[in-house]
Length: 582
Image 1 (tube, rainbow, N blue to C red):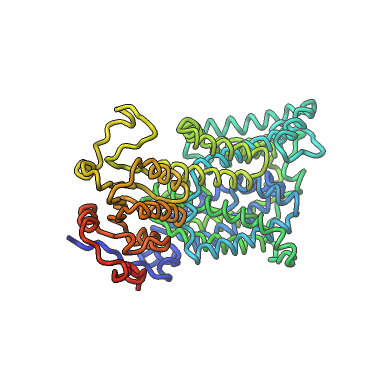
Image 2 (image 1 turned 90 degrees about the vertical axis):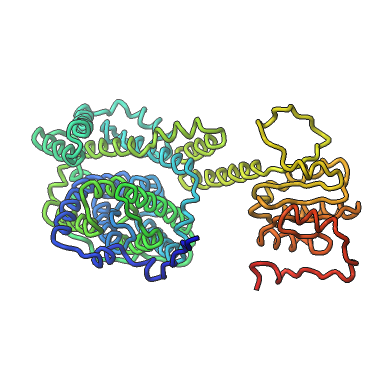
């Protein structure tokens, strides 16, 4: 049979940026032209989104542009994906807004830099693959919750309501908005409706056109031409600077670092999830494969550097990355050019941003929130099972009414318990010997052939086959099944051929049962145990010759019924002699 083992990549190969890869493959003028077109297309999409995300996060619009320029350039230059586009993301709006309210921008900048260090460390330690263990219902639940919060946060802008202090919590926010309904401005509603109509109309009839940028541009022109009395970027923020700020390190000390650590961890986890999910989407669209740990290391660098220039958290962005692939990008150069195109806009056309009405950006974010909410997946998971529905709804509601961190934490914990419960239920104990306690119908559990009729016909030999992972969650099930034995046979054989693992809790429970068997004079034998399973059993005290070991059930029967040597002369099997031990 042909050996299909593959050489493991070296550390250098794992962390070689995709930019280096495409240059090694040969990068020509045609590739540069394709990347320039894709980069310009992505920049057109990113321009209104970057400003809108920053404003929705409680910051000025230039913060979003700084993030897309600095962070986007570094992610593409250093990352492990050919097509990833980095920048500010809608998933961070709720988290960033909360940090800014509590700690100010300096606190956000420091937390983002700490998150960057954490992401870089996760990448170097090659822990990126563990991000996939976040349960899917948790991802769908908190994404849908964020979408609801983003939409609610834009109602004030869409309707032009006047609020002195808008509450952050959803319930009080909606109550305050309702109380302020008398301040609604028809002109603002009209501009919002115009932006929404343009975005949805172009999406249906001209999907290749940059609907969001066109909507914002048309609304800005209409606002200026008609002299509408509505809020714009200029009236609220004084416009957008035309240069990048000088780098500045935020003030920090040990006490502040400790206080911001929970926020930094949340930014890191959320950023890793968003970035790797975006990279996977790009892989599916392009047929390529990203380097997850290299990508996380690049995200870490971007999150350390971007706040030095006034930026906010950087992550991979699914919509812009997908636009990059669809626009015919050849490699990371397109993402780097997208950042340079945004920089060019700041240097040349920044004064024009002052005319952009906030109502049009509110409409943009309303569409973004609708797209973020994975509605089909939400309904499918809600109907899938009670366990998945519990995780989904708990994460969704806690994200909306409590906190994003709490929602993710509770969701992951519930998902882990649900997995353990399902894993425990998958453990089966099969035997030819009937139990004493519970009678069951003949068709109980569907058709399942008898485990071993030959073994079952021998009243002096009892064989129990335990299938599945035998861990602390399943030990009670296994113990209950074993305790239902009506009599102790002469020979008892455990068949572990389909048990991939036994943890210490389950091994101790088995040792207790074996002690009772031995007290009754029963010969106990373990058949088919894998090296890891045998080591766990030995650690629990199931040594030779008190417990015999064999490769198969047939071998165990022969060995258990053969004359045994005197116990004081029996060789004791050492743990070091087991497979896998030096």
